[in-house]
Length: 200
Ligand SMILES: C[S@@+](CC[C@H](N)C(=O)[O-])C[C@H]1O[C@@H](n2cnc3c(N)ncnc32)[C@H](O)[C@@H]1O
Image (cartoon, rainbow, N blue to C red; front, side, top):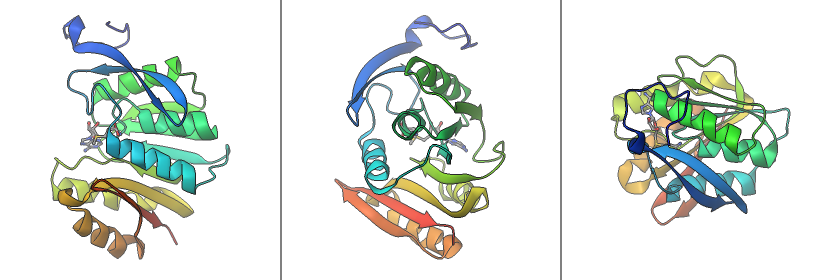
């Protein structure tokens, strides 16, 4: 499957779709061979989405950012479950194209996606920033991305992250606590930790 607005010199068989269910919803996800968790929703991402849905009441008037969105599963779930205004962003333009297609084909509204290195192309502020962030980029880039989140949150806005304990969870937690003045472990599940910081 090759979508008309994925403007790439790439073979057709690099693009495919799969079905998965989350939060009682059956979704079709368009994906590609070089996209994170290309053929199933990642277990850490799933724990993150479940935790946000259980812990938060996000009003339709609120704004949510899915930071480093991949094919857009976090943003799509937030949009469908809460009906909130949702933005998705990723440095990978193929991921952003897929996120747009997936949002449209899964009947999301008030949702958009942009290419952005971290939050560099993101305007405005959000009530929630939710992310399964890139770890492989290294600490310097990761911290640059995370450091920018606080200025893109509204007062009382929250950052939610998933990170594995063995991918530096403790040092990321300490770093975020030094920026936000708080960082809680909201859930642990099979090595995945859900961290949450509130802009005070
Ligand atoms: C762990 S994946 C998560 C993808 C998706 N949110 C999910 O849970 O399936 C991290 C994502 O970060 C993106 N990424 C890497 N470096 C980035 C950067 N500097 N700015 C924004 N996104 C970046 C990658 O393209 C990748 O899609």
